[in-house]
Length: 388
Image 1 (cartoon, rainbow, N blue to C red):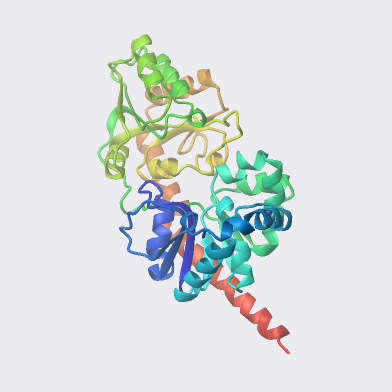
Image 2: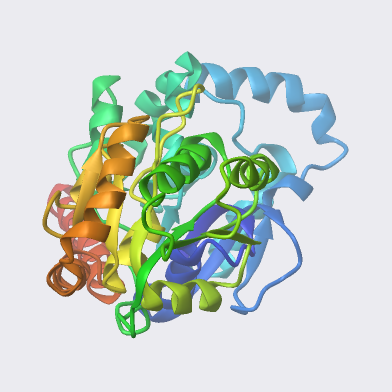
């Protein structure tokens, strides 16, 4: 069954969840609609780039269609003119049976045309699209108009579903299906005692300075403890300087952004994973971080925050520990706790069991396919029942 995956940028190696859908959904019979296409296509799928499809004649009709689409759909992002005709032809040429928009904001651009063509459309909500963007009144309005155009909605966490519902944005066919992790590749290895790891962009919602300061404080009497903070971003240099100021430069390393295989190897060897996620000032939140799912699969005790979907993965006292957002003192206390309690084997087993039960991506892909197939079958049955 041929599907079209709609995403913002293609190809991005870090978007493993999207690339997995493109490669494997219903046997990999997929094509791609991207807001921006950067020329890399290792998956070898047909690609349609939306931003380069406007014709010169469309400049004359643009004011009308921008106003019309904003009024009718709550957003001006819909294709019109040449771009609309060519996208429709792309779907016809590729025999698309349904569209899966990987973010709610992408669904705004493609679901109305899919509806006009009788192609069922689904969307995923993953984080920013149901947190930061949801603060905008025009996005709330657009999402409310979008819901009746969708055959179904998926989210990586119940938290995001609740966020949408709080603004009156609901769909009767909504499902929580996390992105998941390849539990066959992400597995526990030989753990290095007193080893800690943080992985992610050095940005506000990851609060890397809180992680760094808490680790430095908690390990003053544990000079054997080591923390590696993988990633890059605007706060990286601040963290490097702060590590020196705290006298922790010999205990904390910053290798920068690293390949996924490097991260996987480090997770397999690391005892404790740290992620102090918070709600950014602009409202940006996590959905359910893939890094935490990968850490659990590798048997890492995870210390994190009661933020977004994280409590749906980390069971306090069982496979990790949770504190409130910005609770630096509490975060430090939990770091010291794992160094002192010596529950590595017990909690490692619990973490791995959690990943196998809740976040195995093969099982989650099968669940996603089942929901889509059942929805399409119900739709066909209803059409047949109401046919004259």
